[in-house]
Length: 276
Image (cartoon, rainbow, N blue to C red):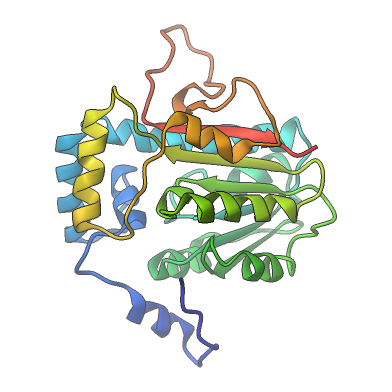
């Protein structure tokens, strides 16, 4: 769990003390794959090795990011959602949640939640909002459900629909009971009309290269990653009305129209579900 000590005179200094530059970290390595610049040499080396084991990893990362943008656009433009709780934010890149949401609805409110100190340092500097919307940031852990909800309520109105975004984060909760329980408790706290947007890496008989990359990551990086089958990922949406086309490869969730072939599948599945 994340330690969240009482505020001190220099919170930025506290965040810096928590940054581990000796081992690759998922947020930084993800930033590297997406073409960002917020990583250390240890992250680049690990990222390149994972790319050797799973050559499609860059495509996998981009597909997840594009899925986020398409889902947020749908929720704002088609479902009328104006509030977003984005847990497992990751390092800022292009087309962050608040940018997509506030482009279509300037009054949208977004709360970002992450427990990585480098993510929080960058988020406070870069993930800003302009009136009439609002953007806030919480240094918290997905598994601390009560704390997340209590602190997010300072910005979000939990009597109105909220989109809960869990992009590539639940896979870092190893125990199934805890993972499904945390997602269920978060959704239970949200009113009807709220949505769950979730993506998760998968394992299947046809993805031995992904399995090899995950084994390498778990031996060298932090935090460790837990793969789940496509069926297990779909379980996170139990009790919700799952939007078409269902829980599928992120690359195939309502892709932009093209003249070419259907996008290639990636080993990251995602979906959007609506609470009745």
